[in-house]
Amino acid sequence: MFGIVAQPHKAVSWTVNYYRGQEHPDVTSIPNTGVVPLQPGLSFAPIRPAPDGRLHIIDSYATWQATPKLTLALEGDYVIQRLWRDDRPGQSAAPSHVTGGAVYARYQLSPKMALAGRAEYPSDRGGRSARRFNTSRKSRRSTCAEASRLTPVTLFGKIVLGKHVADMRPAR
Image 1 (cartoon, one colour):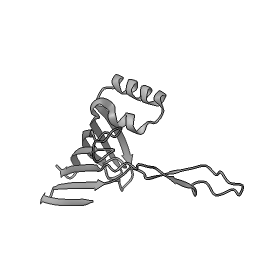
Image 2 (cartoon, rainbow, N blue to C red; image 1 turned 180 degrees about the horizontal axis):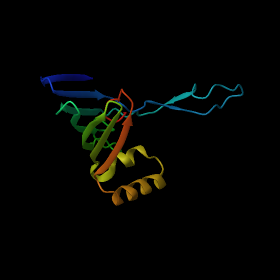
Image 3 (tube, one colour; image 1 turned 180 degrees about the vertical axis):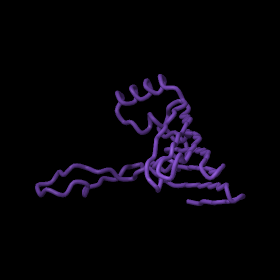
Image 4 (cartoon, helix red, strand yellow; image 1 turned 90 degrees about the vertical axis):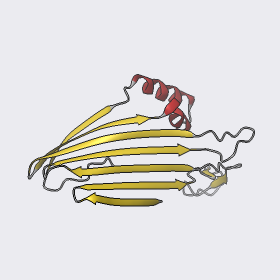
């Protein structure tokens, strides 16, 4: 993982993160098969051939303290993942892309109350990531069918009470 934080102005902060790694398992858990019971999760079997593709994530966000009471933020994400490093018979190295962005706003109404909102735009071209992570055919069909009925822009809002308000970005 690599990250940079810049503060070009005292009211502006910009962060860029890059992550590269292999996120695919090379072993799978197997149920207890012996006479002596074992704790679940202790028995493993290798996956052969193990997926050797890579995951790349670029995450960037900027925050602007427009006024002492108003904070605005922008966020952008780009993710590309391959299950296999090289194309071979039965193993596709075709990439899966996911992009997205969000805008945030927070207004401090009083010392103990703030109003915050978020709008986001996720894009999973072709729904490949949803299909990759859902293993059953039924869940794949319902996920893709539900995704086709949703609008791509989602709005969120919240009212925050208390003196200390957590970061506006969603938990990951």
